[in-house]
Image (cartoon, rainbow, N blue to C red):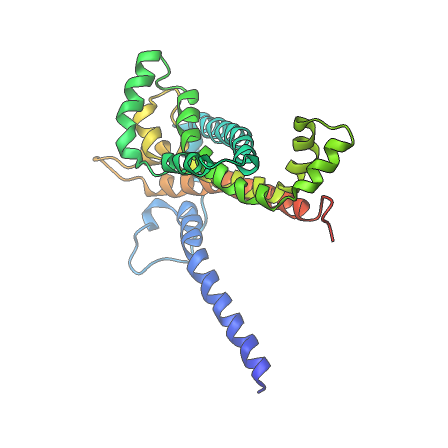
Length: 274
């Protein structure tokens, strides 16, 4: 066996190990969501059984689970969109402004991302209760954006720094203003950065638990809190928990795959295309 063949075999083994490590939890979630409750903790474990959709039926009929999914989508997409707009504009300004204090501003923006959520959840609760935004999707969008915008700014600043300023100057010579140059020249060249920032913002907003637990009640409850509600002191409904966990995975996977398409498109567009 040649050295090249041994290297290929080693690579395949490593890929198989990584796939097993990452796919095993998903496999257990799917299998458990389709397993009858009587076989959930059978000893020895049962791998051959008749699948049932009872857990999914209970999930969508006994609780307003579809409304909680809608709340999560509104919050995650709203926070992602707002963070991308504000964060990309701020990152562009920081990238183009030449000043000795601009680095201090950048660090101050990043420091907002360093706050532990548990330290600010009570002040947020008091503020939103006083202005009537408690238990609303808007409250979560505001809170999540305060964490997503600093991340977006620092991600996008690196991409804006890579765009040659000569391209913007050429566009301005052709008659474009600052806003038109940013929209038609600079922003398309940073499409990969927008895709990466969108993925991080959406995943954080979709999976976040603490703020959703403390700032929402029955009206704006998100899907992460809904799944937790199947765990109580009286009983743990593992079938519904697994079914809910699998349903929660689907929007995130779809969003990541959608952004991946835009990421590939962004890498092949613009004036620096090879």
